[in-house]
Amino acid sequence: MSYKVTIITYHYVRDLKNSRFNEIKGLDVSLFKEQVDYLLKHYNIITMEQLIDAIDHHKEFPAKSALLTFDDGYIDYFHSVFPVLDEKGIQGSFYTPVEVLREHTVLDVNKIHFILASTSDKKALVQDIFQQLDLYREEYQLEENEYYFNKLTLPKKRYDTLEVTFVKKILQVGIPEIVRKNIINMLFSRCVNVDEISFSKELYMNIDHIKCLQRHGMHIGSHGYAHYWLNSLSLEAQEKDIKLSIEFLKEIGVDSRYYTMCYPHGKYNKDTTDILKRNEFKVGLSVETDVADIDIHHPLELPRLDTNDIPKNSQETPNQWYEQA
Image (cartoon, rainbow, N blue to C red; front, side, top):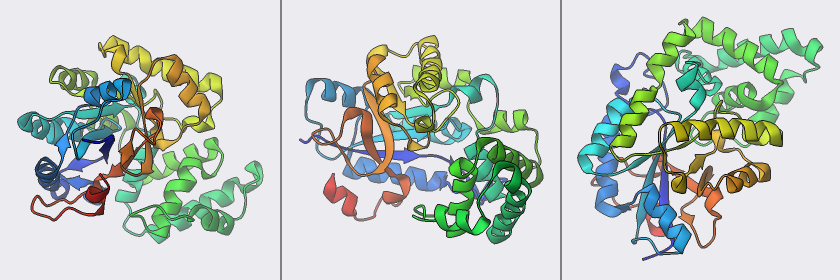
């Protein structure tokens, strides 16, 4: 028995070989199945409700506990993940920004993913962004291109090249929002070349999918309304975004005793956690890389591991993260 739980993050889980965007950085569904079998062999997979009850009453978990979390609400989860979880009798925790369900938008972060997946020459993509920055430099008093590249590629993101790290950071947080959005939309239109509403309906689950997951015992939590970097917003703007997501949780009947938040982009600050405390959220999930330990980590600041940190072969020997669990 212990107070530790290995929380694992998933994003795209799909049949990559037969995908229109086979360069998307995701987990092939065959490897997901292998990874689940590995986890069942070496870990005790618990539910979010078990985690919260243990936190509330400071109870120990079963040894080598694990929890599966799925960010951003992709349709992959319904078609590729849910059948596996349902067959194995284990729970997943799902976090979808409400805006994609209600307004059928495509998140900027996803537009960036598919721009990258549609562009084989990443160095040429960087040069395209440099050309766009040149057009906006005087009006928005932007720095020189070299400044942004040097600043935003350090530290390099795990599992990404310098070019991919730069593209993600410059288009998510590195320059003023209006410039970012203009460049993202131009590149998305050129590289992906599809109507945004149609693409949104193809990419994400809908409300009926979410309700079906819930009926079958999956946990549904908040991922904000518009997938903002919450730490970049004022207190009032954060409160508005989070309350809109709470309204959705209430609408689909999520038990308020088990409210959880998965921070979009992993970004939050004290204002965020204060809002969550006032609204009686029990768990907040970050993107810090570690095994969660409720003796050490605050429940609203729990770290997670990436799927790439866990073996994807059911016969593989446990790695260093297993030793720390």
